Amino acid sequence: MTTRLLHALYGVLAALTGVAVAHLVAALTVPAASPVLAVGSTVIDLTPTPLKEWAIRTFGSADKAILIGSVMLGVLVLAGIAGVIAARWLLPGLLMIAALAVLAGVLALLRPAAGPLDLLPSLVAAAVGVVALAGLLRLERSGEESASSGPSRRGVLLAAGGLAVAAAAFGSAGRWVASYRLKGTDIDLPSVATKTTPLPVGLEQKIDGISPFRTPTADFYRVDTRLSLPIVDADSWTLTIDGDVDKEVTLTLADLYELEVIERDITLTCVSNDVGGPYVGAARWLGVRLSDVLALAGISRTGADQIISTDVDGMTISTPLSVATDGRDSMIVFGMNGEPLPRENGFPVRMVVPGLYGFVSACKWITKMTLTTYDQESSYWTDRDWATEAPIKISSRIDTPKPLSDNDPGRTFIGGVAWAQGVGIEGVEVRIDGGPWQPATLGADAGNDYWRQWYLEWDAEPGQHFVASRATNKDGDVQTAARMTPFPEGSSGIQEIAVNVG
Ligand SMILES: Nc1nc2c(c(=O)[nH]1)N[C@H]1C(S)=C(S)[C@@H](COP(=O)(O)O)O[C@H]1N2
Ligand SMILES: [Mo]
Image (cartoon, rainbow, N blue to C red):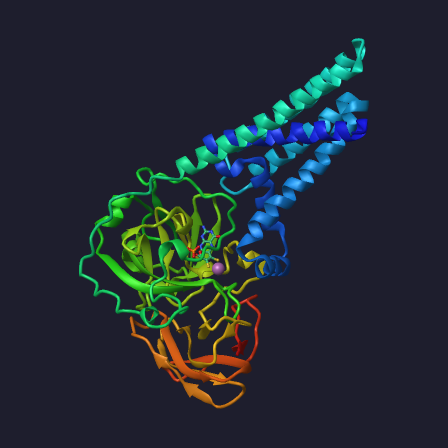
């Protein structure tokens, strides 16, 4: 190993140890303030929308792992350079390591809703990094001064190995502490005022590969800007309603439980879902009416047209106030499929609005609703040029057969799901090899805010085939073939897949 490479390795190890110790400190205090996560979150917020869309499309749910990996790689390259510099000019090299960590700390401090504690992990990273790098170089030098160079190199390599082990240990401890603190969402849920009818049996009993009528909670898609889950304590959690209201109120979970508790089957959809994509899920939500919650603050004389919801970290989502008054089942939710909300999906409380994409309605980890106007205030995605009014478009998805799959000839099922929240699905049609649109058989109807499963029996002949589907809502509107990208107001078009038979 050349000396320069060895010095780069010192830098890398010093940085790894600093980052690992900082990760543990963050896990014990503010998980999102872990230096790599703080840098990553800033990158997410600054990434231009088209690039973000491309990353979601290309990497899917691995996009965040790839982002963290890239940030880590960048840090380690710079730390390697710092190691080489420090071997020559000690102070500048150490300063470079420290500066890297302090920069992460500043970015952590600049996050919305950050407090002074957010600086701590990065300061620890700076201190540990500097001490580790200086220590390795000193060990090397003291070895050179003593007579033989062989054993000295062994000593420094041993120390380096020790650091690597320590880094791994601190990193794992941090992960363990964070996951330990993320447990404990088992709060008592209130029971519904009027019993909800059970969800009808779904077509998944009969057709392999079709999405289950109710998405299992563990399989529910997750879309948000976060790199770590917030740790919110249900006992101290509160929801404040302020802005243009009669009187500002702050509610606890117990206050919410005193309102009429309702349960609704609603299909959630992400605006980033491409035609045929995975970012849609159907669940039974337990909560209270958004209108009942707002009434506690009094909005009958309000001039507001917008609710700005703020989450525990200051992220904002904007929702038209009209969804609270137009009769739809807009909800403040604390339960999902009979259980408390998982951390991933907004524990302890989130908003759910049937008919609007999640980015303009479904604020997770909500702590505040501010009544204001679109003229006065804007929110996270509006600031990034996404639409302000974003109703979910009619869409259908083919679940089976899979695109480009190989299938046996003979009797097969083409099946999937279709949704048109608010209006409901009237029919789904399937087109094979550009032929006529044929009506599919629909599964049970669990309300207009919920998706419907559908299938068509098909006598598949050997060869390659093209299969397309389109939905019609109960107003008679047919899913359009006009292609639109998810940005800025949701995708449209018709999914057509190629499959092989034979
Ligand atoms: N606080 C917060 N809430 C959020 C988001 C977010 O980034 N932060 N993402 C929204 C988006 S874009 C969608 S589609 C839904 C997704 O909800 P889910 O992750 O429970 O499926 O949450 C919404 N609520
Ligand atoms: Mo979304």
